[in-house]
Each structure stands twice: as structure tokens, then as C-alpha cells.
Image (cartoon, rainbow, N blue to C red; front, side, top):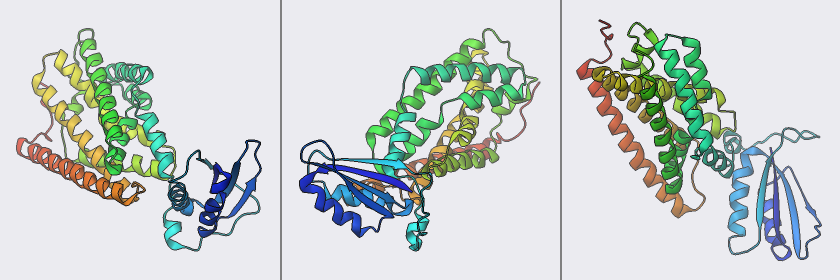
Length: 332
């Protein structure tokens, strides 16, 4: 459930109340406020109807000024409300569009902390890869902040939000760039260890890697859409991006161009799979803009981005099959 507070001018109070009654809230009340000519309407709403109520309130207030809607998740309330009988509403239990957009936009921001975490996680990953240390590689994936820009790109494409797409693209490019540069510099301090299974496996491009990246992106998007913590699935996303990126930097610095090409293909393949699966999940969960014109534009943007991603994915899979990159790397 959610608590939705609507701060409006007194003249707009009746319009808000009509919308609230139409969506059958668990409870609602009006509070007097100290500000002159203002009103506060507080609504307790089932999750399945919260998005519809939010959209209805915004439609009712679109010609008004000086209003604000605040949404707060509720852990529990007594007495326990009656469960939803509307099957469609029960199937629509997900985070509000506005909450999801706020979370993803914040996580996709390019700032100093993001760059520092990208660099530090790459140091840990590169050392772990070169020393065949599984624990170090896993630790690097835990602290890698790469989930945000992937989901930001997919959500931006699903909503037709080109600002979010551009912001996420810059953040992801910066994160991968920092990872490549950090690993490249480390390659001059760490003689490449071709006996390391962890390192050499990142130069193997197999079709099962496609399933891993698709599952990681889909799980991350679904967790965010349902308002669940995406920390653990963020590790899955980092597993698909950080080790190949660190390996690519090490191979380039060591002049191993064949291995570097394979690691680059694995990295690109994982990026495409992560984005495509997240985009499909957001579309399946009906995460879309409020207005029908924006919905039409978002649908077109989704089809274009999904088509381009699917085409690139098919091309990469064909290259894997044709070049037989799924075979074991010759360690000699």
C-alpha cells in the first residue's frame, strides 16, 4: 500500500476528492493546514490502484497551479484492509512510475562516487582475474555501480525519455571507460597470467553467456518494477560487464589483441543482452508514460530500440557461431 498526499489550493480540493472517490481508496481524509487557501488530502491506497490514482490526479490538476503529490510506501496498517478483488489491479502490483523513474535516474547519475567505485571495483576485479581469485572477482562485482545506467537506458527507451537515455549512455560509457583505463594501467604492473582460468574465461564467447546476460537484465528490471531491492541482481549485471571490461583492459595493455577482441565481443554482447531484456520487462510490466501521445511516442521508441538491439544481438550470435569463439582458448 501507499500513502499519497495531495497538497492543493482550496479551490482544487473538490476535483481531487472526486478523483479519490472514483478509485475506491482504502481510506482518505482532509487535513487543515496553516497556509492560507491550502488543503491537504491524504489517501491510503492499494498498490494495484496507486498508479491509476496518481495518473487521475495529475489529469485533474493539469490546468491548476501550486500543487504537489507526495507518495510514501506503507509497510503495514491496522485494521488490515480488505484485499483487492479486481484481478487487473492485483496483477498490477508494481512500483509507481514516478518512484521508479526517480530511483533509476538517481542511480544513473554520473558523479565522482560513480567514477571512484568503477575504478576501485576494476582494480579488485583485475587483480582477482589475473591471480585466478574467484573471491576477489565476486567482491568486485558487489561494489561495481553498473546497474544504474543499464536500467536507466532501458527505462528511458521504454518511456521515450531521451534525456534519461543520453544521461545513462554517458554514465555507462564513463564507467566502462574508467574500467578499461584502470585495467590498462594495471597491465603494466601485473604481468598477464595466461594460466588463470578466471582471466582466460573472459576471452571465451559462448552462447550460454547470452542466457546469463538476458537473465541478469530481466531480473534487475523486474526487481525494480516491483519495488524490490536490486542489490543482488546488480551483482549479476556487474558479472556480465565488469570482468570482461577488466580483462579487455589487461589484454590491450599486454598486446594480446586476439584475446582482447574476444573480450570486447563478450562485453558488447552482454551490454546488448542486458539492455534488451530490461527493455522487454519494462514493456511487459506496462511501465509507460501517462499521456496517450507520450505513450505512442514511447511505443515507437521501444520498437526502434528493441529492433536495433535484437538485430545487433543476432549479428553477434552469428559471429560467435561462424568464428567458433565458444571453443576453449589455447593457453599455449
